[in-house]
Each structure stands twice: as C-alpha cells, then as structure tokens.
Length: 492
Image 1 (cartoon, rainbow, N blue to C red):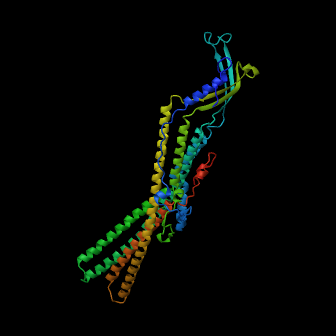
Image 2: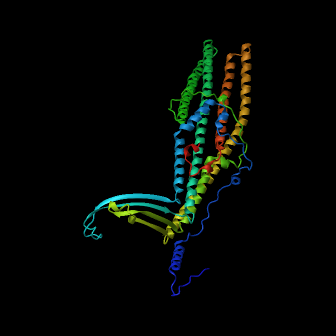
Image 3: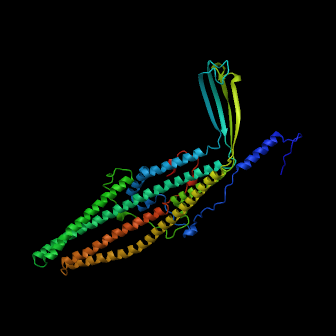
C-alpha cells in the first residue's frame, strides 16, 4: 500500500495532502447500507406444474380461426378505436418518454444565456466610484457545459429501471389488445347463442299454438276438460315471455359489441351471427412452460421485477459520491460598447463533489423502500403466474369436459329426432294421434335448446383458452429502446 511522505520541511506536499483529504472524505461519505435483505423467490415453470414441452402455438390473430369475416371486421375495428386500448398505448408512450429522458443523465448538457441590464448604482452600496451614483448598461453572454460521469452506475441502473417499466407498459398494451379481442369474440358468441335460442323459442311458441288448437278441438268434442284447455292456453304467454326476454338480451349484447368497437350503441342492431357457422379449432391438452413467455401480463409483471431490481441498484449507488463537472465561457461587460472586446471574456471550470455525509439513515430508508418495491413486484409476478396457469388450465379442463358432453348430447338429440320421425310416420299412418307427435316434438325442442347452450359454451371456452394462452403473442418487449420514436404503433 503506498505511503504518504512528508516534504523536506516536514509538511505534506499540498497535492498529496489534498489527495489524502479527498480519499478520507470519500471513505467517510460512503455510508453503510445496513444488513443484506433477501428478496422473495420468483416462481418457476416447474413450481406451477408446467410441462417442459412447448404447447401448441396459437396464431397471432387467433379469432380468425373461428372462420367468420364479420367477427374479424369487428375485432379489427375494436383494436383501432377502443378507448381503453388507446389509454394503454398512451401509458406506453409515457413510459418510453421517461426512459428517453433518463438516458440523458450522463450526457454532456449545454446552455446558452444572454442578458442585458440598465441599472442605476447606489452611491452608498458595495459598488465603488466611478460606477456608484451613475446609470450604466451591462450585458452578459455565456455558454455553459456540464457533465456528470456515472462512476458508480447509478444512472445506468435508473435507465435500466425506466426501460423495464417501458417494456412492461408495452406488454400491458398487448395484454389489453388481447382482452379487447376476447371480449368482442365472447360477446359475439353470446349474441349467436341468444339468436339461436330465440329460434328455438319461436318454434316452441309455434308448437304451443298447435297444442292449443288441438286442445280446443278436443274440448269441443268432449275429449278434454277445461283443465287441459287452460294448461294449453297458459303455455302461450310463457313462450312469448321467453322470446321477449331473449330479445332484450340480444339488444343489450348488440349494444355492448358496438361500444367495444368504439361505435354508437345502436350501430350493431342488425348484427346476426350464426352459431353453427363458427368453426371449432383444436387446442393443446397440456400447458407448456412457454406459457410464461407468451402471456403478455406475465411478461409485464416480469419486467416490473427487473425494473425494481435496477431500482435497488440505483438506491445503492446513492451511498457513493456524486461528481459533476461544469465549465463556462462567455463575455461580460459594463457598457454595451465593451461587450465584444477581448478583455470582456470570462471562463471557468467548476468540479463539484457531493458526499452523502450524515445521510445514512435517509439512504438506508430509501434502500429499504426499493427493496420493498422489489418484494411487491415479485409477489405480484407470482400471483399473475398462478392466475395465468389456473385460467389456462381451467379452460383446458372445461374444453375436454365439453367435448364429452357434446358427444353425449349429440346422441340424445339424434335419438329424440328419431323418436319424433317415428311419431310423425305413425300419425300419418293413422296409428297415433297428434298429441303424441307434439309431445315428442317437445323433447326435440328441449334437446335443441341444450345443443345451442353446449355449442355456445364450447365456443366461449375455446375463445377463453386461446386468450389465456397469450393470444398468439410473440414477446418483443426487448426491442423497446430509448431511441424508439413510433412507440404507439410498436405496442400493437
């Protein structure tokens, strides 16, 4: 270790003394950071039961797999004009702008000032004669430069933290777009179900009218009593009520779809999707580990953990000295006629050193706050991961169950239709009366109502699964840079 030698006169050399003083101040200025704080543990893919094998990937525009151009157009419209999606893009713009602003911390900053003053100087002030007691013009023109070197990595950590927040905001925009598409698609399926149920209800109303006509005939012939006739009459308003309730729900869903597409509520009142025209696509039977990289909400949570980690690095750098270098050059003169003379020039250099002396308590509290931010970000990440795995796993389980239900219900509907065909044939052959035919038709109507509900649930659950798998999103958040200009479009 080098020693400090005294001069020939027994005193330290001035430069050596200054160096020793600076070193002592630096050591004194580096406050203790306190005991280490272990962060929470982030969950891994294996912790939530995800398979190492990759799952079946979903296409980016997954809704097109349903094979309905009308739905495609609605979702395209929603992704362009939905206000909540626009707000998400704006949050990304803000985060990207803050990252760009943070990146300028270690750049050389320049300033230019120019001012002119006409002043009467006091005879009893600090300014001596011949200026005192007279009025003079004065002017200053000055160019300044400043630079803050990042010796301890504080500004680099702040930049990485800001970039992490910007990347999280970009992933949030992708998650918002996926949610909007999911809402439109599921509302579209709901509307298709209600329209199909209304068709079934109208057929029920027609059948009830036939039963009433038949009951009236049998009552006139003395074959039925008023009890059977009253029961048949009560069936008509009940069927009409069901139709009216479905009409109300159809109107509300159409209005919901219009608002999701940023249109007037009445804009989609003629929308009539066909539930049987929507295609059903295959979905994965197991969840792969790549789910954590394809769910934008999971990626956003992960980037917030990264940002919080760099926030701790920045807080730790505050324990070390901060150095700033400033230089200026310019002209200053009393009297405008002297301003441009060489003798009016002035210049200087100002190195500045900031030492965090007696600030240990404040800095340690600030560091603990950043460590708490990291713990919170990790906890939120873990929660998002568990929710993502659960929602995707629930959807897979429901899809598998609905496939089995669909097969059983298809068999039930087929048998009910066969029974109805036999009843019609027997009625035409004079071997059965019309009541048997109508009662058999009731079973067919019931099965068709169930078939519509199962079909709608199957479509809705598959849509939920496609969205839960990330909607085919490709993680491109790492492409966010501080020089990015068109940040709003990059969020798509």
